Amino acid sequence: MKIILLGPPGAGKGTIAKALMEQDGSVQISTGDILRAAVAAGTELGKQAEAVMKAGDLVTDELIMGIMEERLQQEDCKKGYLLDGFPRTIPQAEALKVLLEKLGEKLDCALELDIPREVIIDRLTTRRTCTNCGEIYNVKSKPPKVDGLCDVCGSKIVQRDDETETAIENRLQVYNEQTAPLVDYYRKQGLLVSVPTSDLETVMSAIRERL
Image 1 (cartoon, rainbow, N blue to C red):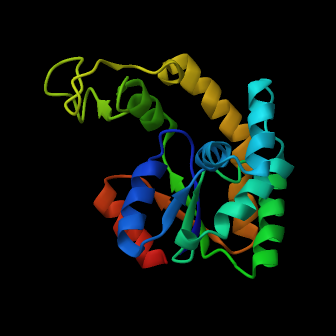
Image 2 (cartoon, rainbow, N blue to C red):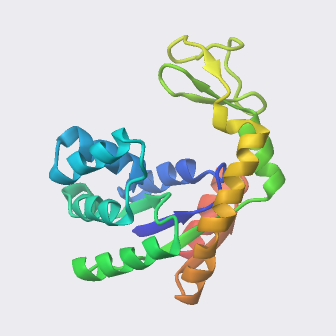
């Protein structure tokens, strides 16, 4: 499958992506991952991205699209891919459409994870992350066995700076201004599949039914 994952912070895109990958062998692709991989590989575009990031500037859409083109042509993408957090804006969506036409590919759908705002706030403010291995916990639904310590490696778990209520409100505002318009963009193209989020099994069942 070739799918774009849409949804605000805390919608569960990572969890759904993992389940979809296990289902059909697709790979999850995020702009952050491909930028880091390109930098680590020392490709020409990776070197350009590294210079921009070291200067503290934002990577341009043109550079992101160049790195995305390289990534989508790699062997592991032949079974399908899940674009997580990309595109973020209408111009990026338009550029992606042109790129896919160039590669002779097309999207199966844009999958929107529809989640109430109050659920997002509750989910993210109760999330905790291991400072060492990155394992994620939730003080309500998935607490560590020992308070404040990671079950996996024993390191300290903390609330990330971007998961306080104030930070989350800011992230949601940015999402609503920049990314939410993509819902209508893909709806007009007949590509939107909207799934209300609940438990994983229910969401996956709805996705399978609609795809």
